[in-house]
Image (tube, rainbow, N blue to C red; front, side, top):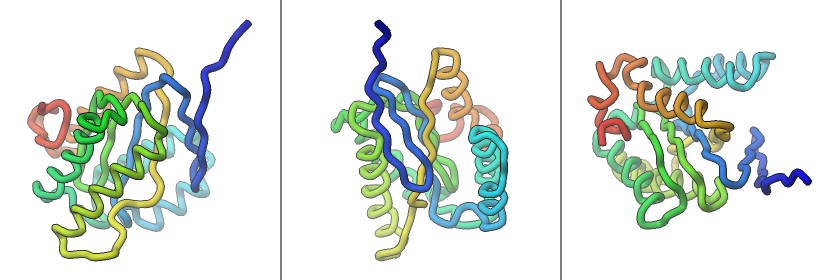
Length: 187
């Protein structure tokens, strides 16, 4: 008899599936980091979700509109601290790769608690601390919605890990992945 692993599901604007025991590719971005024209194009697009993600990520990599608060080393360090804290000491996940770009974050993780708890904790702590550094009180820092994709096999895991760590190179921010200080490749 074929047995299926339990799956956690929740929905905001996007559906979020978290099959038990699977790695998750997670992306979240700064509030207002994608222009409304781009958001409208994506909403009307008939492209598959993966292709829509790549278009949005290319726009984020260009960082031609919206805030770039993660450019600040102090704020990037705050977000990096929250990512690492979720792994140790909290043990909410095992963090296999991450990158903090000027306006968004990518992470490849193995959840040990529900994904909604992970994103709420990461975004809540980092937004409170970053907004304090920016002198912004009670204003949104992160976009409410996040993108997540569960990894289906070892080949996809390696492609996603490479995609994450090469992101600063592809965006023209570094010549090699290990040169970008806000990345697992730099560690």
